[in-house]
Length: 223
Image (tube, rainbow, N blue to C red; front, side, top):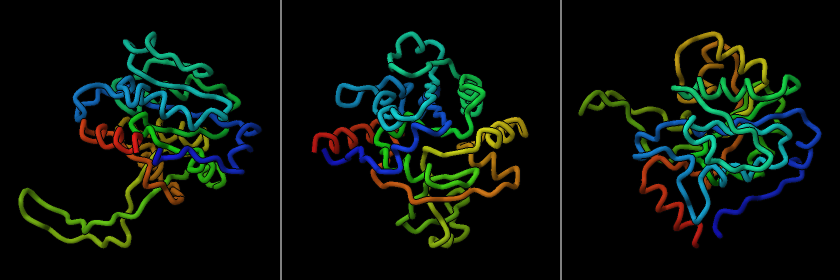
């Protein structure tokens, strides 16, 4: 298998930390063509693949579509129905975590290859908001229709991954501060004017966005 789920010494400390995780899988999967949470990869759902990296987190919540709740079997996880938008689903996950939770990880089921090493790297950072990023290898241009507006400085650009780690109170405040949606919760924290810390992400932490991505992921798993 080309994508190992690595263990890291720091990861073992999670058991004594009041940390929760919200696994977000309530989306419609518009670009994929169907909801992704229960799509199978190598005989296992994307939801179950993603959940593997968080088995030592004390409080675990999976957020799926209301019609999928009864179909999900994740021992040790609380499974709840999500909302219409991503931010609504994250809020549903927060509400399902115990009040003692101090820090919360938010992860997309569309990233089934998240590793325990990446989770540990996030947990080792004490900043109130921490996100994993990877460099962008391609030249990136801003375009307007079919016209190039400008070339963006690649050295200052990064692709953002999940899981993202937040102080519970900060994430709660960010969700309450605006009714606007965001592609990631760190964007809502930015809107508050709060700092967002980065740590190195993982190239193998692929995102399944299209059916082609699922084929690539299957090929990686099969070696």
